Amino acid sequence: MWWTMSVAGGYCSKKTDAYCADFCGQDSDRASPISRLRCLLRGVDLRTYLLLLVLVPTLVVSIYVHGQKITYFLRPLWESPPKPFRDIPHYYNENVSMHTLCKLHGWGVREFPRRVYDAVLFSNELDILTIRWKELYPYVNQFVLLESNSTFTGFPKPLIFGANRDRFKFVEPRLTYGTIPGRFKKGENPFVEEAYQRVALDQLLKIAGISNDDLLIMSDVDEIPSRHTINLLRWCDDIPPILHLRLKNYLYSFEFLEDDNSWRASVHRYQSGKTKYAHYRQTDDLLADAGWHCSFCFRHISEFIFKVTAYSHFDRVRFRHYLNPKRVQRLICKGSDLFDMLPEEHTFKEIIAKMGPIPHSYSAVHLPSYLLEEADKYKFLLPGNCYRESG
Ligand SMILES: *[C@@H]1O[C@H](CO)[C@@H](O)[C@H](O)[C@H]1NC(C)=O
Ligand SMILES: *[C@@H]1O[C@H](CO)[C@@H](O)[C@H](O)[C@H]1NC(C)=O
Image (tube, rainbow, N blue to C red):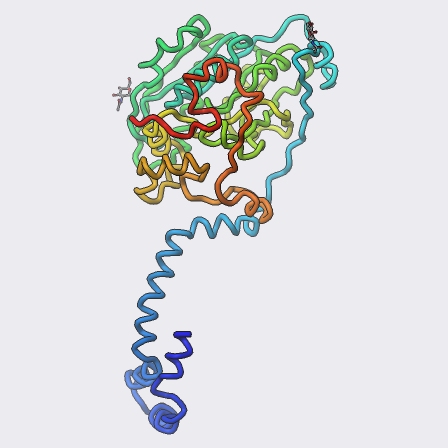
């Protein structure tokens, strides 16, 4: 509306056509550039100027604020989906014998189980680490944990595990704990520090005594394989040398089930000199329904804020108010993204299907057993308890 009004109200409206043509038309060849510009501007009135004055900054600001969203939404145009995994069906029921379970997967059963190593890089996930280690405890021979006094983003951090080691007495006889000093390189890509820490974890595994054909779990602390999955893999012969685990993706707690597409966790039959600790795709084989990935599953708001500043996607924190505790609490209860980002999917159909908050789930079936045994202590991870402790 404004546009048409301003054009119609311009000085070069029909009535003054002759004057305009006279001044700006034929004679314009001889006119100076300045007067030609004056002619051009004459056709635009004050309201249009004001409109441009408002419109242009609005456009610039909204591209600044939503630019990331726009590029994410257009991802299907500039990035083709990765090669699909080869999904391996996973059979399990607690009343079926190991002999039968291995056979169902096309594997033989061993006379004795493999030794199992669980190795993690630790940042600050004390609660989820407890749930992980309690879940895996019956079948893991060595828990290997490495901690640095630098975050991936190069900020100093206290040795949080070291300071809380007495909370983990139950694993003490099976624990190999290592620390590594940060390099504190300013302005470096956080993935470099992360890679550096993973190399140190390879060393720590050797110190812990890992040997050929031992089973090695490579995953982040919050990617928890289910107990029965590890039991199956340690008892069956002929399992693939490397196997990714398909985990259910949860956000903030087990109340928000996002999808079952977490695949980074992997299990390796260790080969000395060949196996390297990694968190990227290493093979096509993906075992279905093998556990849980609970991202940002923290007890305190302060832990969310620490994690956000410490981890390798710090670039997603584009505005200070993203870290306002009230905002964080509100988004946790809604199941909305902390970074106001669009889903990282490769088809428009998936992006649109996943836009907006994650729907609430009311199922607490088939979760890590320790979570239910100690439900009072870990209420914040169960459906219907989104309010976090401050501090
Ligand atoms: C499961 O196995 C146990 C022990 O073998 C047996 O006592 C029980 O009856 C079985 N339950 C079912 C539902 O088959
Ligand atoms: C990190 O640890 C190393 C080795 O213990 C120490 O020399 C260094 O001062 C520590 N840095 C910070 C910032 O704590």
